[in-house]
Length: 242
Image 1 (cartoon, helix red, strand yellow):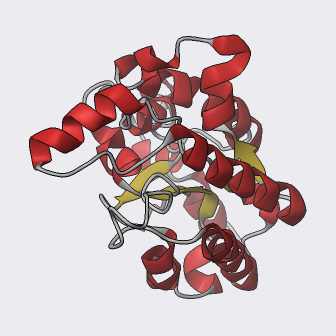
Image 2 (cartoon, one colour):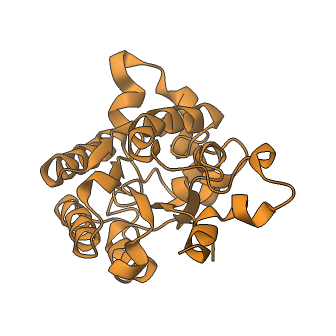
């Protein structure tokens, strides 16, 4: 069987929506076509309390980890919900931090080294837009940008202490007082501009990890039309001659 290396995207709704039109995951998949399979394992509404139990089911052992080229862990937008208003999704900051550490420890236990792990912090919250979204659903504003920032800083610190790369989306989008609202479609989820922004920052990290991946199967004009098998599967042909 021909197998491709895998890039696993693990996160909440911002990951689940990554394969929509102009989504950051779809753009990555297009860049990596015929080099790496991009797997979307985004789970809308999920937090790290639940995610840490799911990750071992996605990569159950080192045998299943052998073809993992990289993993992104992108949680925090739900964990940082205000407890009094959204207790179902809220995870205390200390627990969130330990849950991230736990997921990284697990990946390392199945032989996925820290250089293959990328943490992505939650993006900033634009409270006026998100409040309008909340009101249409019949509840109060349940996230605050300052609180999400604390979770983003904790995520970045876990990355630093574990040796994993970090895309600090919360900081990058607000760098220099930038108008980060253009990156958000509803105050929380990414707009087309936000998807493009995340993909561009993430690709700077991923390209270094994946640039050595070979193009799988030869270009069409490199195939020997009289003996296609020998050029399609040269390693098999070499074994026949042994």
